[in-house]
Image (cartoon, rainbow, N blue to C red; front, side):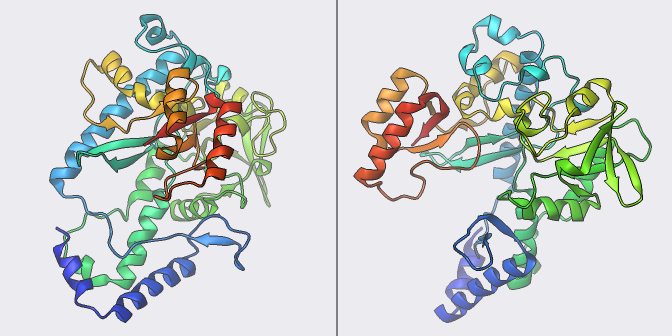
Amino acid sequence: MYRPLFDRLDSMPAATTRSLDEQLEATMREMGVTFDIARDRPWGRRPWFCDLLPQIFTPQEWEPLVAGIKQRLRAFEMFLQDVYSKKRILRSEDMPIQPVLGSTFFRHAAANLPPPGGAYLHLSGISICRLPGGEFGVKHHYFSNASGMSYMIQNRRALARVIPQSFQETSIHSIADASTDILEVLRSLSGVAEPTVVLLSPGPGSPVYSEHSFLARRMGIPLVQGGDLLVLNDAVYLKTVSGLEKVEIIYSRVSDQWLDPMAFRRDSMLGVPGLVHCIRKGTVAVVNGIGSQLADDRSLLPLSGNVIRHYLGERPLLKSLPTYWLGDIDQREMVLADLGDYTIRPLYGERIVMGGDGVRPSPEKLAEVRAEILENASHFVAQP
């Protein structure tokens, strides 16, 4: 399936290939696609990188992959519904209590909080990798925050400009209507005929702020920060030049802990005071549901099979990449014995503490990471 792409690039002089690569990077800059703050660069942000050779999925690969992802989503939706109410899985001993109730991302304020449309997970992502046997496996869950949707669309746009032949000669499934589909899902969560939908962002300091602005623009909805919203008479309002406008749906790209200083972090300047109260009153819906970040806790990834078997009575269709929670003393000692062979990451987010680049860490780096692990072991996981 890659042969036509390989043959085309292989037949080009090296200078032409380099030129295409430079055009692709320039196109990304022109489109304003960035990721992460890079203060050492004159434009302040690191441009998003797109490869000339895209990942190709045949229907034979894609269909079982979709089935496996849907299975996980169903199971973890039931898991969230359960742990924020009856907690049956914890009583059954199919899941250890400590990684769940002791998780940094378990939100006590979400207990019995009505999720939007009766579900916690509406827009979700998942990180896929190739396991040693060649089959697809799950590297990370991004169920609570489908970061990357805009990059998928922008990659297509950039590649279509630079190597249009690849799109003209190949039957590629279109994703052009993705943002419209997302907006329709969001609007369906309100009983109002024409609900006001906003995208809540942490602001320009976010590494993926370009994604927030792109999605809001494509959906035709306001891109707002916490200070743009106000709670009044048990409802949320958007401050506009013509006065206050009631908001029924908030697509949040702000982590749960920062969403409402009255319910979570008191020092938060990113959220909206009183937002959780409005959710309880049913005047506003926040997508994804508050508390859903628990499903992304990396210490729960190796327990995914337990979740699937408990709620669905099925075997997992997708394996998980071996993941070791360093809060467990046996797993921690095993990892520390060969620390340089692992990628070390926190329980949530994009930060990589060590590894992931194929370069053996220096003795100094190993000592630094070892000390960081020993100080807060329960905050990290290790993957090969």
